Amino acid sequence: MAESQNENKGPATRPIRPGLFVDSGSDGRPKLCGSRCRETGEYFWPKEIMNPTTRKWGTLTESEIDGAGRIVSYTVVARGLPGFASPYALATIALDQGPTLIAQLEDWQGKTLALGQRVELKIGVVSTDKDGTRVMGPKFMPLSS
Amino acid sequence: MSEVFVIGAGMTDFGPQPDAPVHELAFRAAWDAIVASGVPIEKIDIAYAGHAYQGPCFGQKTLMRMGATGFPIVNVENACASGASAVLGVIHAIKAGEAEIGLAIGAEKLTSPGGGFLPVVADDLDSSMGRVMPAAFAMQARMHIDRYGTTKEQMAKVAVKNRRNAMLNPRCHMRKEVSAEEVLAAPMIADPLTRLSCCPVSDGAAAVVIASGAVARRYVTKPVRIAASVLVSGLRTPYGIVDDRSEMSIRASRKAYDLAGIGPADVDVCELHDPFTIAELIHYEDLGFCKPGEAGQFIDAGRSAIGGSVAVSPSGGLLAKGHPLGATGVAQIAELFWQLRGEAGGYQVAGAKVGLAHTVGGGVTKLESGACGVHILVA
Image (tube, rainbow over all chains, first blue to last red; front, side, top):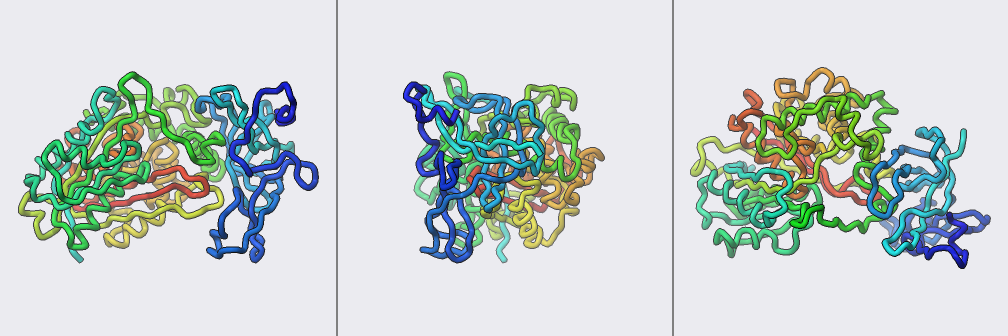
């Protein structure tokens, strides 16, 4: 899915929002784009304007965030909103570097899901616009334990 | 400290009313509340109107039809807690000495005349990732199951109880009894929540007239005292709304209990924010009706039924009465007003003296929720 993003013949794609992720980060794998505090080391995703934890201005720098994490909770959505291919698995993911996010899982069907299960980031199709444009965003692959 | 009382309440039926303009729904609720209170319109000093999606100057458009114009009218949006926020606004104005009598209105219309539902704008990141509300609550359920061994059958019992209560309340949207088996066998929405585990999409309006202690008894012989009015907003939390407890509900209810000088064991009747079955179980624990992890046993033992230790959502709650977003918080206050005056009819909680209204609203990425209101009313 993600690999079709740059193919000439594939359907049009757009990111869910600009500046949330890169397909290929410093180690060649997909990464999230966030902020990191120079003083506390805390990571934020998406990027923040200022550090909402310390309430200080000017301590954040843009930073890549690694996509390794674990499932905090999950569900399988049988009836989603228009544009979302139901059923889909949705999970709350705690990244090892700190931030948490709600995202869809990839290749989850037929796999046993559990709280605490390890996952890794994969950029994929989150939903489809009315005109067929595929909306790309962060998704997570469950890893077998 | 100055005391504040509810002196009148009004409410429309809840349910699909595609052909009734929302201002008309709000008008009917407001008019019924004003008539019940006996307050002449010219004595109203302030009004707050709570809604989520009904457009600008909603309160003015509603009240001008009864010639109620000129005084301050404030429109409030706090998602599902809009109604509770409107009630709080009126109470604050009276406590500040700026008003003697105020009107709180809550209304919402979610169905459209041509059929179907009005589109709700999703500009939140979590929403665009696929986080529909049932999915957020399904993830709460998964955590509660994993941590405490809560069962799907225990969750289903919440829907069974609130539907049963609704059979006694003619204003309810869903008035058919359901069994736990039917709840579990209904079409899946977000595992483990089925369609019958979720509140319906409803239209409706509610209003209450609130007065200072100095004037309340001029109008009614049994005003109902508001012993605590608390609104909190959500903290930035690691998991946002996905947790096996509601920190906001814990924080707001503890503050309300302190202000009222009572504890959870003193509450006779509670109108609780139950958009999904799991939410009611988690909130038993948050509000202190039982210990964390014991909500399943609490419903098993019938402790939250009418006649139990605390009757929870005798009106049918959001699950069965319906959930017209902005109306809900005001409707809860109206229900408690009737309960504490012994006027609730078929779903009256015998001898109810203390009532608690609890509402939570607003999906915001990285916050638990937008706002949580807790009001405690005493007969």
